[in-house]
Length: 87
Image (cartoon, rainbow, N blue to C red; front, side, top):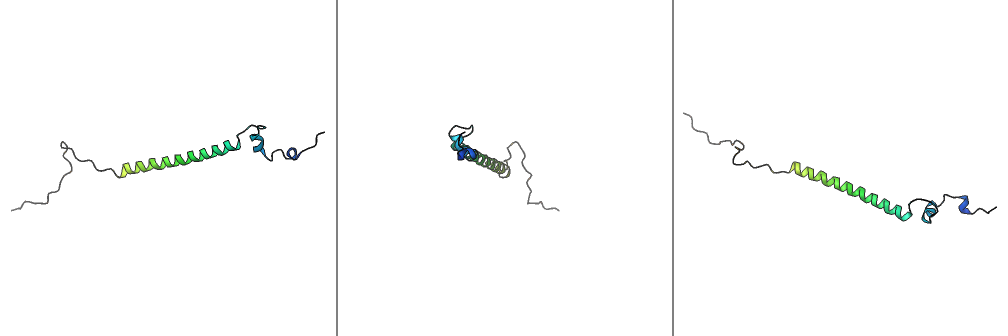
């Protein structure tokens, strides 16, 4: 009978090491760290994109200059300050 080693007594103590050495299937520690960083960057980019979309919509809706009347349209009615004398 073979003598048990500390690794045999606690087989799941260092599963990352088993993955890195090819004894188990899974992502390598470096690949996992890169994946987490890319997911974080993607989440940040999506949030920034949403903020920019909302800002563009706000400025488009709230800060558009009023349209000028064209020569063919009568435009807004103007109040006349001069009143003819009655009588």
